[in-house]
Image (cartoon, rainbow, N blue to C red; front, side, top):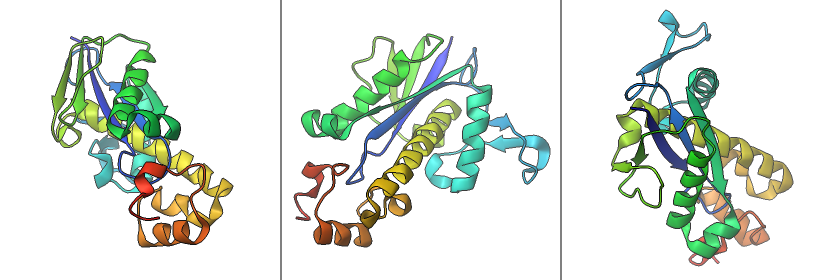
Length: 198
């Protein structure tokens, strides 16, 4: 059975698209707990997977490259700020997940989705609460989604420097909220998320 892990990044921020990744680590079963990698700082030549939120940015980057090199198939997709505003953040997250699955080069038999909702897929899907801490394929998807989104937020920082997107990635930090109040929202902001701020 070919199993695909799915996770999203960016449901909570005040700005930026929401991202999702779909990863198949192994052609049989749930994948492996660690990946072979080339970072000399890691002893034993393997790098254990983990929830992206529990990893440093450097470790996420190393794992990102290892996952892309070694996964049977992977894909990253997003839903735009406009789509988030139109259909709400939950539906936009699911939309990004479905787009990621559609881009896979290998069709999985089962989807393992982090969280408590898994609907709208053409493939059997199972929601797993806390899956990004327990299932390697979901951990891998968590890493790809977060790194992909963080890189785009760094690019947005060059377009809209007053907001500090490279630092907080769009989350509602005190500095970010202060910048919104001073400069007003930019096109990257989710206006529905700012109602309590403005």
